Length: 114
Length: 112
Image (cartoon, rainbow over all chains, first blue to last red; front, side):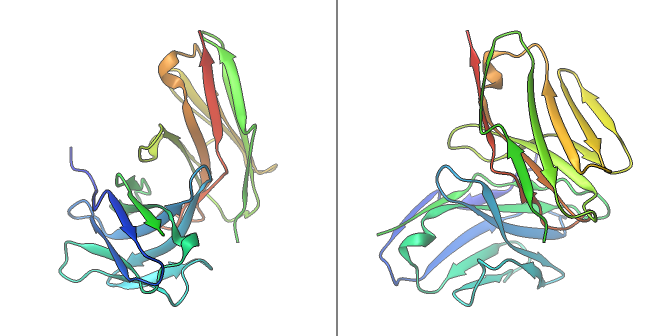
């Protein structure tokens, strides 16, 4: 069964550094999302992406964040200048669209900012 | 925007008994309500969902109910088993391809 994949599984970075989290959504899916989950807390929506552009973003998704689908396969989340509070698990999800709203989550990338 | 409240935050039930988790939502435009199970360190996995044109849905030991008037929805797990121990999240979405707004989660412990 096809799955969403994410790399790396764990990323450690210094405060102020840029990080790129990578996701490969399920082939033929049309909608893509990033969520984050701070340890022990709920899953929070960051951004949705459709037809090569952002369709919606949350208050968390400020100017430090950006997303890209550079090659029709990968879907990336970039944090330009990481802060301590960016430490969290970041989940990518994809959705086939066409009226099917099941979002398939990837295994997550644990980001630790020191 | 949508806000989803979930309770209880922790629930312990004896193996074989039933567990009920309740959620409320604020946006009357929400029409899709998934439930996710998350085991420690793992991704959220969809276990059941319900759409606003349906009041109840059942899948083996799991059932969900939806009261659109009151903006309440609930998850019922019957004949609980040790493998049901996990964190369960309710969620709401205003349309079929949109973001999902999660509740804070319920940690379910199944006691032997």
